Length: 248
Ligand code: 13P
Image (tube, rainbow, N blue to C red; front, side, top):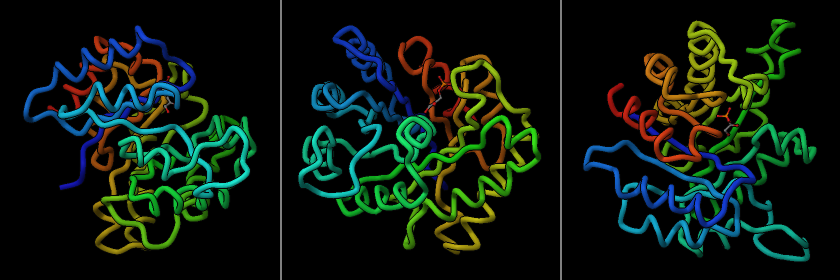
């Protein structure tokens, strides 16, 4: 069985009130909850780890530097994230690729740093609207996947998140057929490169996932969960997505 994961990316949102939402979330999970991960901004990570201690909710960071330490003002390393008790790091989010000029090679190096620190990398890939309209989606996604993913991937340390850029924060979602087509291709690429391990690596969908569309998205055979932005900020919005994943 592949890991089923409901991951929340809080992006640059968060304050003490938002941490109350995390407390609500940790208190609300039953024994058979799927894997849940909340990725708050760096300043809230340690507090989030303390709040979720002993609950099924894990904590992850949204990015890291590729080096373990050094003269990199403003950056945070994967060993630091591991030291405070977080379990995962998102790498290659399109907001990092686009807003910070991160290349596939940069993201590959970050994923290697995440693994070296003993954490799980949640590696994001996704096409722009222009690429989708140009019928280039599958080629673009395959190229990003192969260039961003380091050698030696395994299911315990890698999760892929397919997030079409045009679906992020827009309320627009690909058709189920488009999601299935892309996730099937990702699965085939993972198997081709990593064999049996590639069959076990979880692949999440991200981009305007809400309570109202989660159950349908989770029917797709190679969708193992979701990376959720806006709808992960409130426990009342995120919980139905977690429940839909559990029921899938
Ligand atoms: P939204 O769920 O707000 O569309 O964001 C998706 C995302 O970018 C998660 O990483």
